[in-house]
Length: 179
Image (cartoon, rainbow, N blue to C red):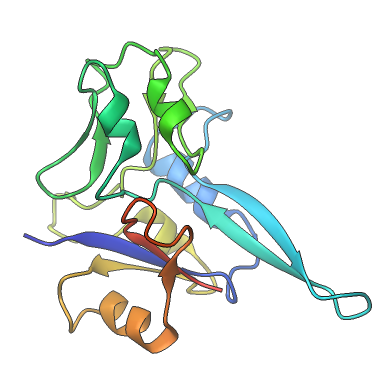
């Protein structure tokens, strides 16, 4: 079975929010819900100041603190390694939100349950393993694929760019960044 992951190249990201719009459309999210949020980091000193746009979403951690604290088991790691939320079991206690070091979980205002990035189209009907945010990105800043396949585009890109999880080995994240 594949071990899915994502690479986000912040050198290519222009902060256009196309990934956010594609994600919201794909997942039927409310306007107030966003599974992807942006942060900016300034580097350098005036007059050579640079602003780096950093998209953040669920890191699909192998050591997921959100799953560890969920009292109902709604937050769990699926057999495919993707961190999932069983909406029928979620009681909206927000323990997972407090435990997530990336602060990427959101509350659905209509149901009171907590949700997050799902690597949305991994189980698409046609068998394609692709996320809407990756397909929508106009600059090609995102790559999705099997981290265990050394011939996959993502594995090659991680090796070529020395991409790293944003917080090091804190949670064994499956989202890698080129910064």
